[in-house]
Image (tube, rainbow over all chains, first blue to last red):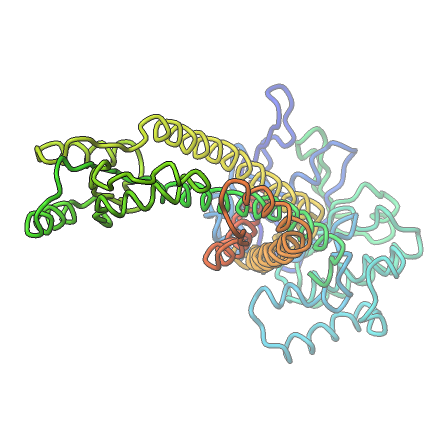
Length: 221
Length: 286
């Protein structure tokens, strides 16, 4: 599903954010990318959804070389990915319904199809009674659930999550993890960047450890 | 627009104020242009005739002069008519002319010029042609007044160009930055749209339409506000100013320029949006 070959990225001459990364992630896998702050976790995820371009190396997603992709093709790649961020990134002046609908509207889906899928996605995350609410009217945990619904509404082949539980309490973190596990059980490949070792211990999956931009460990606990 | 009403009001308000200033400048410019046009109507060439011409000769001269591209009208003023005009000009002192013969004054031809030739060069071109006819002895066209008029018109045009150019630049700058600020306030929204797979065109289109709508609304408000202020305050003061210079009435912007203001507002809104969006949407693809 995802193959990363000799990937490198540096922002300044003397410091590399990523250095010669080689990874292979299979379809349907659930993988943690962990490491200390500044290890390159977020940078790696940003490369995967073409938020940044590497200095060297290649990334293949489902056989497509995304590093060589034309700028005009990037939106179409992103429509097959779901991305969840630590700060939720919901549009504050739109309701949850509108936020979760947006990825489908972008794809030109018909209104009745959008309504059906959005309701299903919000029901899956337990927010079906909050359709008309705005992000600031709900809690942080609910906002993250809405962000996950938005990511899953397009039935993505890969779900990228960058510290999705970073701003949440323990109980909410567990609830969020259950949602990711449900998505993974349905066949979505999940790649989660986190420094929360307790989370990894409670929900063991394959772990890739980064340190100073390099892969230092890749194991299954 | 409905999702960010305050931002939109701020953008429309700023554009309306900027365009109102442009509209006022336009009103002043058009009325002063009307003033110079009314002055220029007084520009004429008077050529005195050595002796009273025969009917056929007069007819030939008139036809010849009317054929000049610069000439609008040719009027023959007989000695008697000239004497009568002189008597009227003297007013209360007209009794000074008692016992005098109209033949003391020469006949003349008063030549009026077309609008595009009412300046020194246009006058000199006609005078050069008239000089070829030996019957036209003396030509008067107010050389000094003409030179001062030309200089005044040149100064007016130059000032209008400088001031108008500066005003236009300032308006574009203000509108562009207002739109940039409104989009900056919505940069998170733009980021999310690109992250979920929105193409640049899909993301930009609603904002460009919004920019156009804001620009049109700003132009409309500018037109309404400037008309209101013109009719309530400016019209009277302009009339009293221009009346002393010979202009009887003042007018608001002509309809084509009113439409031009609306179009300019809309265009500014579209251009401002497109220019700002290029920066905010593009960086997502680095």
